[in-house]
Image 1 (cartoon, rainbow, N blue to C red):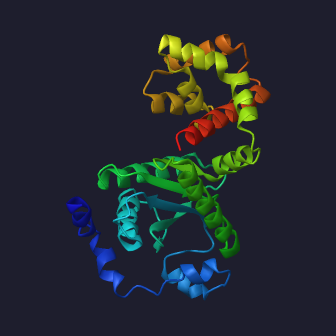
Image 2: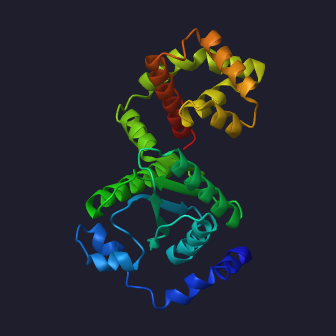
Image 3: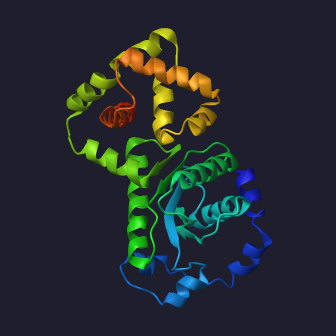
Length: 276
């Protein structure tokens, strides 16, 4: 707790100096569906001609309030040179993350996860969840991005998976899988595609399932996947070949990739539900 208090004094000088003269909060008004004066958004640093992604960060530690959390988030974003206003939201904080290229979200995923990890460290390892909405431009579309981020945070809480980031795409998939209300069918589905890999990992103490998940997380980009797993690209290639051999599947087939990816999500979802 002492470290948390010290953090609040480490806020950048420019942020401290402007807090008392900061413009009035516009978030509650905007979330009610009303449109505040556009100049009010500009006062908060939001440039409406650009794309932003709403990223809501929430800590499991109830001892920190929304304003304190917003200050932590501001520090982490500023340290990484990320533009976009930060605002407290209830017991959490939202960063309107400036997105230069809305069709390429890998950088957004990496940066939001880095921020989440940094805040976790500053809170002495407390669980921190980050929900991220899709990039949007304009107040109405950005409100939808905020709604997606909020839905992702709720999913973190429902599944007790606070130590992670959940993005708009994953949130939609999880919601779709949850809507089946049939855990037996979900189990049958993931076992159809992953049973051989799960059994192999268990016997051989290998990491084929983790490798496959990282491969999909990085959109099949081998260099990024190898970097995330801290292995050589040749090692990654060998693992992917081994996955294809054990599962008797062609990983270049898009239908196979779709089913494997969904099976991983179903497996992850059921494991989280079983831990509740």
